[in-house]
Image 1 (tube, rainbow, N blue to C red):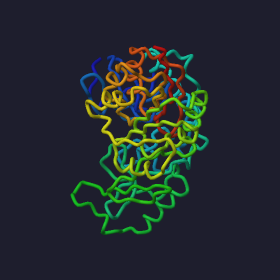
Image 2: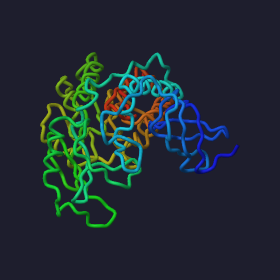
Image 3: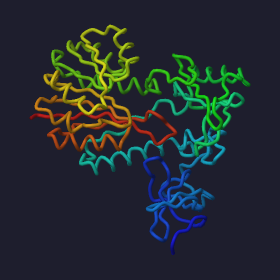
Image 4: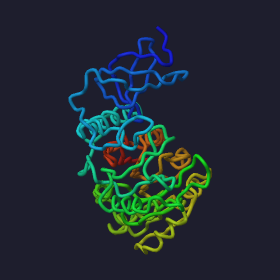
Length: 381
């Protein structure tokens, strides 16, 4: 039987996709991605979109629910066009969320050539709710909130359970100004963006400087790096890529490394890092996505024995040129916010003679499919 748009059928969820949607197979063999369902559940779905190799669907009913399914704590949660899409996994217990992330990490790393014995159990967040120290809101001057799952409609949010108290206070202060003529978008169909941050306050149509969105989990990330570097001689040169304003640079300086080269492409971040005057740190502003960025850096700093990096979701663009240098570091500590690009870069490193020592998954954003990876690679060449 062929699959048609609008078709309704019942099936059992076999897996979860990279974006957290349920993976369901139609009798035709076509895979259908459906938000709001979980592995092992029997569900009834309606096909809403057909692609050449897969389809998308809408959850109509959960016929046989998972024992871990729960009532979402947030009244705005959902997968519809008028519901907030920010925390798509709220309908499942936190334990089930962590287990799903662990399974996905182990499966993807195995495909990349990293055996499961090297993958540690995921580090859960101490706070399932009330952890997030920043958020990006949208407003039309009358309503204030987050975009719905489809990204077309604005969901007016009075409160958000994942925000920490200070960030939630910013949301309430902004809501107290509604209606606000100054927040009306300049173009029809667009939204005015307001960033809020527990420490940095609010910003209108201008991104606040980046920092990790979960303070407690960020401390675990810093502690992981600190413990893995503890045995390294402090005279070894360290090069840090995507240093930002010094989230991990401060750890390196505090540990007493005397020769640290911190590289970042955003001038505002490097100015902030220089202003911290961390001992032993030389700050460089470089576009790390430029075609010749890594060859130039390795010509200048090929004597670095330790590499620390925390790239954005795109990962290392041109990893082959970084790890193909004549002189390359012996140890790489890779903090990744995207599993797919991490696997891509890990393959390159292993082809260049680096062996994975360990991978530590960490749950930075509960209620979402996102997972952070902390990895150590070693090269004895």
